[in-house]
Amino acid sequence: MAKLIGSNAGGNLGWVIKYCRICNRKLVVGVNAIYVCPKCTPTLNTYYCLAEYKRLHGKCPYCRSDLTPI
Image (cartoon, rainbow, N blue to C red; front, side):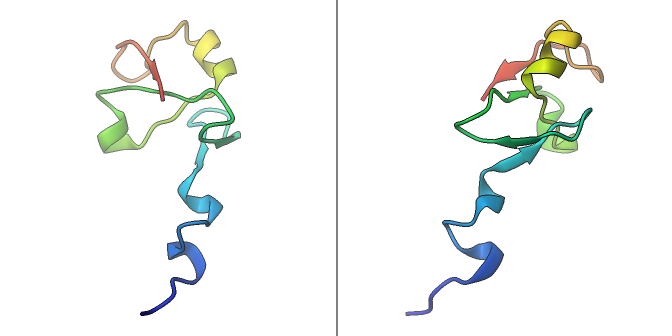
């Protein structure tokens, strides 16, 4: 049985770190509040931090739909 090494390993932080689309802040899933747009995230891979969520008044800057927390 082969052992996964590097970026494909399950314990690698690359699987749980996202970046805010606007301010490029590093967001850790489960630690930070992360908001996504249900319409744009599958195609544009957009994630937003709490500060940008407040600045955008809870609306996606691309399609103006409501942002939802992860």
